[in-house]
Image (tube, rainbow, N blue to C red; front, side, top):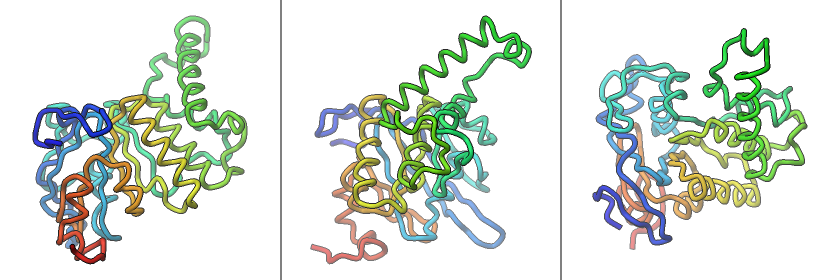
Length: 272
């Protein structure tokens, strides 16, 4: 695999394209504390890109920079070849970037269906007057959004809980609903913040399968933060490693696995 080429084909036959996002020399500070220091990497079209590192390494801060929640003091974000100006999270969502959260952020009193429907918000174009009249554009828009959401529900195999309030669901299913809400937005780039945190082995296997299927069947580019190294090494095309806000490794899973700086700082296994 030639990761420097404009595009390349993976061992399993998937085509990885040119960078859709480039993070260039990002530095983020909170008062006198530097959370991210001069970090650069890219995310290529069609790949699964993992961001790993110990607690406090700056992973979630980096995701929040990409998501527009934090605005760095230095550096640039380029998306689809254009330098991104400072934007709010909802504007970035409108660009086609969706995310899930480390701590589940669902509407607990609403059903699975209604939670996933909220992922269509950025695609809703009809105004309040047309929605009040209902017939015509509003009805067609609602029908399209419902069709897309029903497809997501079928894809994630959660038909049986579509009318269940998510607050009554077990943790693993809540995580799946949150993934469904992000997928309903039909993102160009999907950000997953510790999608398997707190899951048991079976739930992790299910979530890994869905992430791979999202990437394969929808062609969605994915960037994820994950602490389970077995999962990261199994499903990722490339991995960037952070430690104390600095980048210490970047490459394929095998390259990262054999990087001595990564071993010393994070993996904690003997170097062959």
